[in-house]
Image 1 (cartoon, rainbow, N blue to C red):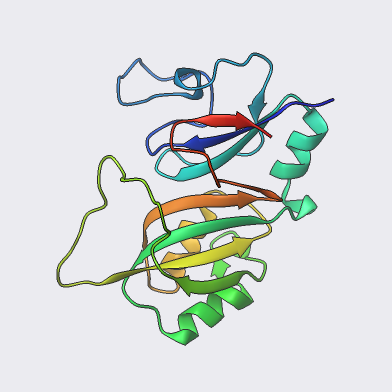
Image 2 (image 1 turned 135 degrees about the vertical axis):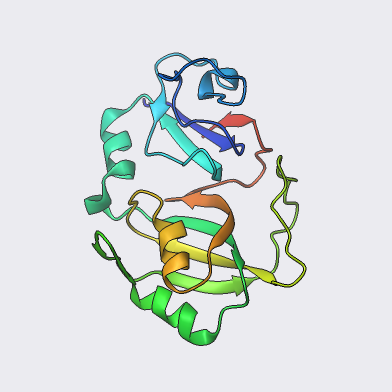
Length: 182
């Protein structure tokens, strides 16, 4: 039976257990939070992104989650700069063209700020002259910094990015910096 761990990764944490760079107190790794031997991240979540990271000891499951060909759905909550017009959301829904080619169609909708959201450290910068809003975006591929590049491509840079769901697993009931067995 494979082991699956669901971890709510805080901002600033690398999605790996060791850091190849020089030791720095601001570059925390998974080892600071998870003391479970033999599990590895299934896919990645950028250092400046937060939320659900699935870890497992099952290589096949790990590959299925991480491989874009498997089309595993992932849902993100993105706080974006500006208030997007319907055309921008429709463009995200159709898929946008990035430097490495077109993205698959996505499901996207405006949402209120997620309930029970933990404060981010450091906080997101606030510009009084530029409003922001939240969107929920579900994609079925996982290119490098894809959601950030997609929102920027439609004129709304991402200020904060939280992965809420991977396949059937969600962040529900997992506080930031903690994990639970699935």
